[in-house]
Image 1 (cartoon, rainbow, N blue to C red):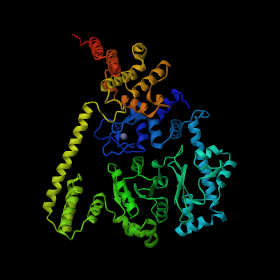
Image 2: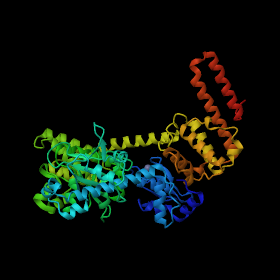
Image 3: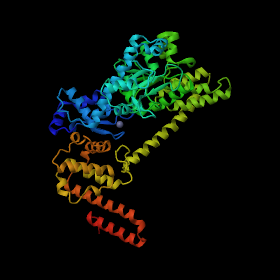
Image 4: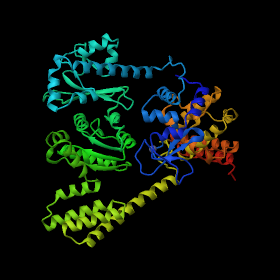
Length: 595
Ligand SMILES: [Zn+2]
């Protein structure tokens, strides 16, 4: 729906953007003239996410994401524009304008939440019928208490083709909706049948307590062990963390990341309410970002088997730049958390948590396993690998601790080991410095990777002129009328900037505000990011009519050059050179550099 500019202004004045962002990430005020924080949308260890209270916006110089306070809520809570406004309204104690005009996407999402909630209720009551005997037996076998079953809302999908479908149709949902929400599918005979049949049902609940999906576990040894909701309008499995809705309220900002639903449920029952699981086959960046909002220390608790070890290694790589400490729970003897709880009780897990190695210790342990330390060769190879691992540690104190420990454990000369580590450390630092130099050079050459315009490096001159034109327009909307006869969207070289120019000028022509908050509604992400970047850097341009005109000239010349290049194939060499010369001459005369 469309909100009036007065309404959005009111919302902005009631919501303090620093306070808003500060609810999700810790804002740093030291060493910077403006508030900044670690970006919640990409992993980083030093802050490049800046807040601009003066125009109620933010921009990240690391990943190029930006927008207004509403955009921030859209991204961090995964909401549509209208839903984000509704949430901000609730928090600010404002009444939402008449929302009967909700757009189709919002309506569909709401239907999906309602359908999932109804299905969860259906499964939950089905678990209390005699037909659910196999599920009840499974719950008993796993030793789950009635409180646990209730806490996680576990249920049962009856052993029937269409029990849920019939129920949902009777509640007013359409077959097409059920199909779209992945609760029913069309059979080969054309009738609608349940997706989940004869399974223990585990509802997946998001951070605002909406049921967004289900995991369904078989009750015997048949395959597949799990059937999960595929992606829908409210659920993307690579984005979700199971049980984070429960664990996020635990104090201590420590989370235990388990392999699957059942591990999490067992851990909660055993007294570890901070256990969660990453849903989907591969651990994703979106999941890392989500976890880092709620924890400073993460324990990885994957099975001790080979697949579990691979998952641990992959998770550690993903977590390399995340602003949290990582430790690994070593579940000995091929066990999973459930088995340990059964045989040793919660104390068994507690012991493993206490003994959990950090990243360095874990990697050293893995390296050690590869070699026979009783032979001179084995010891030598291990020490070289260990030196490689330690060379990546930035703190000299920490390096020294491990050098001393390794030397003592292996009965080897501490100084020799230190020399080896130092040598590799130098190489490591050199490579890092080279990388930093390369990045600096890129920045100087205008190849700033964060600037949300993929064509920028290829058409640098044109892109920079476009940026100045757009920024100038933000500062002086009246330039549009003054210069509109000289510059049309078609003159733009890069796509992102053209779309932005089109959007801004259309609004100016309609007499509407081009301020970020109002403009961003319904705009694609890249346009909003670009506008936020320009807003954040508006102090860097003069904003004069002369500058604007100069940029129009540069842009038109660049555009002409490009078109000439494109048509060069169809011209004779002579013709091409003649036209090139003409372009050059025109450009020089116009920019006052001609002789
Ligand atoms: Zn970022």
